[in-house]
Length: 629
Ligand code: GLY
Image (tube, rainbow, N blue to C red):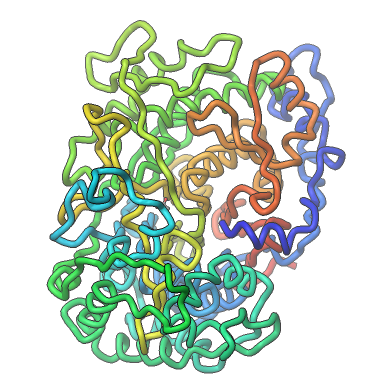
């Protein structure tokens, strides 16, 4: 998520500890009351759990006929319009993602990749589409090593051609539309084309994204021309931004289909741009770029893939998410399996949060050791999601925070009956925090949970000249080198391989019907944000808007957990530190918030609550087709 947006847009997180109910301030949740647990009586009721001051009314919408939520008003309007005019949730999701490429171009657009999880009402099935970028065929595990064998400086790698993977979003949009949509691909691009031609007023978020990536945008002539003033400065808030190049790109995609991109002139232009990034004459003399290795054939060979979703049962619910190459489904799933052994809802809040942090710590250890692109490395998905394996990890947690880095366990049958750790050294990781998540549901009951990204804010910083969109730097999601020369690392670059992701688009079924759809941006904090939102909603019985607004903490097998300031200020934080030995890194400006959730909940069949962030980064946009009066 955009760090500077946090600095400039959110003067203070509005939801503070002082505003929280007793449940958030350290008492057990409302589950306790309903369960009639002794000694906890009336600490909180469902009513108080719903009294969160959601200051941003546009962030919650309840109604029928379909619902959407996203980061921008343009994308949410596009999705709602598609739903109103006969499109289904899949059409809406494609239209929203294409529109985000227009009005949130620093985190989205045809130069990126993503993962789509879909509930199909007709067949009552969950399907997923992997639109993750691929490494060109000349990739090797040494892609990000210098001549002496040392990992490259991240900033150099990030804005170099070698960081650009073959974009997957256009293939994914086309596939989703063809297999599951009601409208044509061309029709789903219409709202984005309109917005790109008509233009929109630059928002604070747009401006801040420009500021955040200014050095790279200035250094590439195509990006400079598209996104900056003639003098190379960020566009002021309120300036009308039009993108006729992107409008034309989408129009050609609408006319010729995805082959205009894969195997067509656009694919050649992308490969050429990666090989010869257009460095501006104004770039500093010491601005270095490593040319890329992508060819037009790499682009032509790209395929979006259907993958089996991950699935676990949790507290009687069915939780589906994204399988490798994303680590989202296995890591959220493993952490929930570990948590299922503790009665979180009836524990004092500090103890429940201690369990949340430790489950996440353990699941991240296994993520780092075992998850990569399963087309290239054997990923023990069944083991990582097995209840028996989770039990062998849970039993490591006693009364104190574990010492990180915790070693991974052994997720292969027969699963250990005692506590499981190995002696493997976990790999370091670094993931971008841009990305966006959107949700859509339609009147027929189809649901989409969709996360996509160009990796860092502004991706590689390189715009395809004349085509109006930025290229990703997704290949930097590969590990640059293993933790030690002899450590097995499932996430090293290889020809055609997809880097490990944290994207965790999730759909939860209750009694076999959709109940929740949730996801977030935020690099590896995506996983903890989704996990915490699920725990808030399912175990702590918060309403969905409240589950989203609650202060966040992210434990990813580091010593200290990254926490938002409001989390650090809450009474439970003191207990977590003093009783359980947890330590915190408080997310300070410019990294003040963690994640940006968009979600929806079926309150009853047909009646949906769409919910976005009320305050983080200025809040998101939830909309329904027919608002409930
Ligand atoms: N680039 C962020 C992710 O894939 O998780």
